[in-house]
Image 1 (cartoon, rainbow, N blue to C red):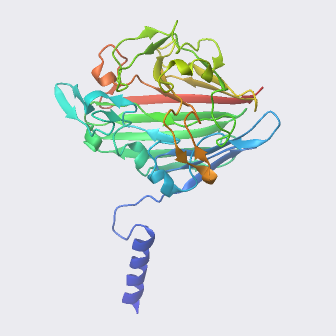
Image 2 (cartoon, rainbow, N blue to C red):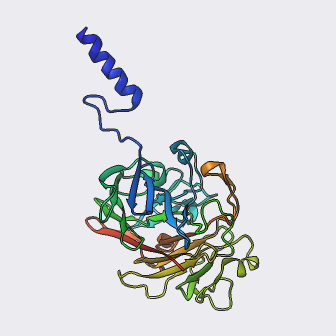
Image 3 (cartoon, one colour):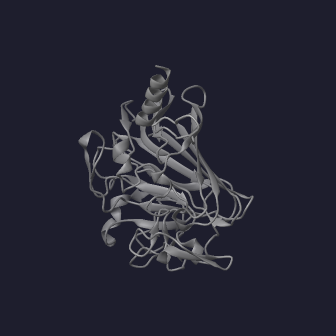
Length: 358
């Protein structure tokens, strides 16, 4: 009977995914909520995703303002990176390779001949460990951790990574991403890939939303969206949002829409600076993003066509992304700010997102 009980327990552990005695710990995939009054968000440790963010409009009506899915299974099959933490190196790396300290590293190509968002199994497709979790209180927060091994998707060196989400007073969200390189130098560029629609995730396109981007220069790209290496002025181009304007005001001058990196004004130090402000006049919701990173990728979900939460179909321009980041392909562009993290040193990416109503 005792042998049968032990065998039964062992079988149940295997069936439900819990670690068996003597085995390596296996992380469970779960959903977690942070709540501060009527300001709340849900997350999962699968890909350290933001699943939802509820915020009142100027009339006090709550709406979920990030695109996403209802189930973890859908996130596993997702190719849009809805709300994901993207890495080890977000954005594009030309030719899926780079040279560092005399060694050529070949990565896994997943965007034609290039690498995009860390490869086909980047940080958005792994299970993170929940290190700390406080769902309510004065400053609700959660901290996810992941150990990226040497050679993962072709990148050199072991890397310890943590991502923290914290709700602050006055409807503020702080996102902190940190990484420590162990034995080898490696590039690191972590990004939060939330798709925002301030009218609500199921409210239609974002072309009438007003945006201001605090960048007088951008990095032009070729036909494969790889930077040319230039850093040019936005003046006289459809990329000029130094003064607030609707997203749709200039989008017809582009082939598909916006998918470009801006060189933020005031870069060159680790202090928070304004990246962008977005305002949806119909709902009154406003979002201001500050960061310590040198760039921000402005993307208007140009090719999006995906069934999301509640069965709603997200279509092109159904959301915008503002991915604060290092410059794309910086590992192959010596004039771009470096993303190399040396052994024993730290990478730190901070975002502060302020929500309000007007």
